Amino acid sequence: MKRQKRDRFQRAYVHGYKAGLSGHSRDDCPSQDINLREYWMSGWREGRGDQWSGMTGVSGIHKNPMVV
Image 1 (cartoon, rainbow, N blue to C red):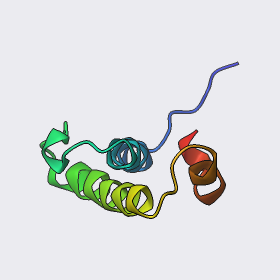
Image 2: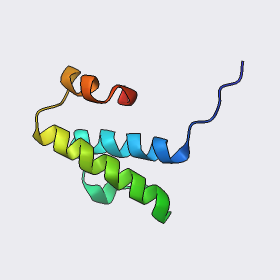
Image 3: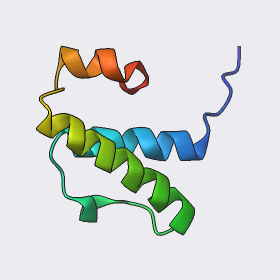
Image 4: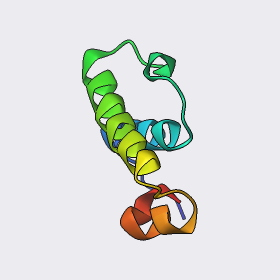
């Protein structure tokens, strides 16, 4: 059975969230497309905020289950 492709913007958001949660710099954004970069940065900001709040590991999964 074929799987549907995921939304590019959601995928960029999730990758940005993971990068922010793991403490990566915002300069690590892989995309040059302004729209994808915007979604990546919003995910990065939320992930960074969660890292500062201590929402890493299992507690982070409860907040955002899509990121697993």
